[in-house]
Length: 316
Image (cartoon, rainbow, N blue to C red; front, side, top):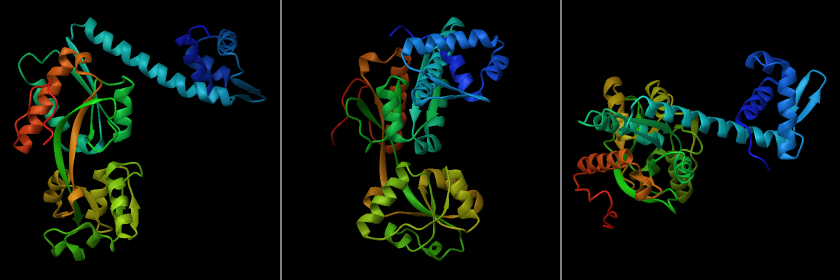
């Protein structure tokens, strides 16, 4: 198969999204006949029909749907390449892309990256961060879409190198009038008889809670389903349900709104996060500097002493 043309892919995506060649033509400021010619050439390149012509427009075939997903990914990658190269053209000395889980983003990463960028000699380094669930973080690093990832260390890190970062502690957050609010701490089983706020089904926190409830033979009762920690804490503030949230995320909000934060005593409630990457030799100088800084800030937070960046973590 010949190399795919990005312009043709971009027009193909526009046609699929508009379900019309004429509307895609108006959007791209290209005559419809030129788009049709490119689409025909694209179909010839992949060797299968990509669009079904209908009376009032077009729609992708099954092959077209598959190509549409790949095309969007390729165009997004091309856009990142353009942005990265433009940064170097303006004199930027380093660019590091980081994928991180929601807990890491909500807790400490922004502050740690900000402190890194404020250090002497780091003013010409750009750090981009994207939030993903832990499996997507690992996949993105494996596929080369980011220099490094930061996620729960229970994720499948096979084929990647890793270093310890920070840890957190899960807690039940309640309204001050909730029956559990009088406690100082509790085990998760004590929370199972109360309505809870559910996080996304693929989030690391929810997966842990479901596993724990299954081991206890008890159901999880979700009164509200939300997409992030901030929304969960707003539900708790309204006294609609309780929520399991990292202490590090909950405390600032709880202090401002009078909520109770009750640390979980279960062993699994203490989580360790790690920095993962493909190979140390493959990291840019800027990525190595950021890796070292994040190791150091994580070690300082836990009271431990980090090893050299190129060393394996202490098995203890």
